[in-house]
Length: 221
Image (cartoon, rainbow, N blue to C red; front, top):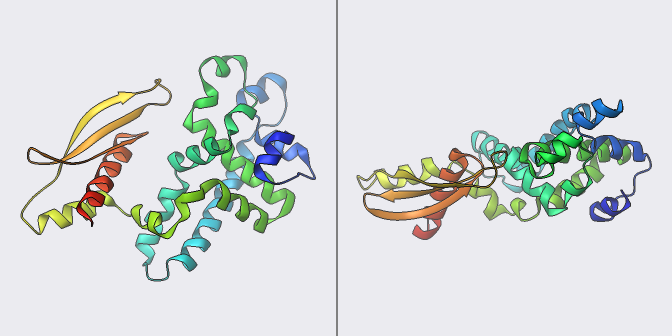
């Protein structure tokens, strides 16, 4: 756990909190020890408040509806999975033998849950400000203002832009890669026969949004 503490930049006064945050329910059931689900519940609230406060001050010109959409993009499974991967969180999770064999350390659903649980553990151990610091660290580049605005509904923005010229985008499925428990979908967005952009994501919707963002970037919009 000291290696993970080094990566977080936080030494736990109560290491039991971190141990619990890293314990999958499968391991907890097998060994009759607490697991991360209650901490995950708390961490979700800590994360949402921290991100809400950050967006409120960082994007003063953005209205409530758009702030809500940006926040949703930052606290969703895909973003938390990337945050967990930045600090190599998967290697520290305690899993049952069966979950280990099924690739549990790489499952986005587990990584995102554990990331929330770790944030809750930090909050309980050292308070909200320390949790906010770590949230800023693990989300990293995703909190830059220009990146935040990219989280707005790119598909809607692209459609509105093209409709002004009497055009309509369409989305073509390209591929699905990766294991069944962690698929990565790829799509491209088209204007008739012309490709406008490509994108990948852990769901079809996320991949289409990524393709739309790529198209908007290429168009300078």
